[in-house]
Length: 73
Image (cartoon, rainbow, N blue to C red; front, side, top):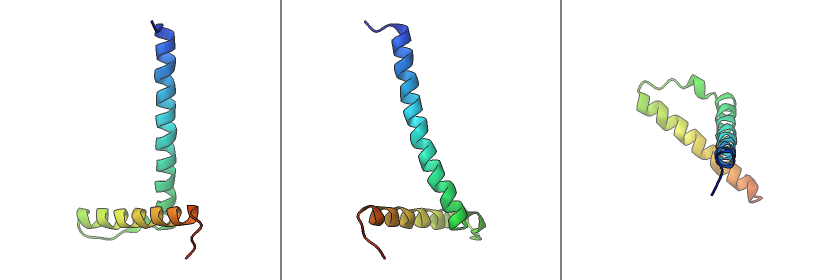
């Protein structure tokens, strides 16, 4: 039987891992906002703005994957 203390430590470890993963994702988004000026998108419709942001993040992920595989362009 798992003690309550051991259970709490396992849960805390899980939250720390999830937080670290979220932090890495939020860091990438923050960098993309600065590098690609995502805060300055002047699209009129909300869906258009979301599409621009999604396309930019998609290209960012593609370029990251390409660099991990040793591809340059």
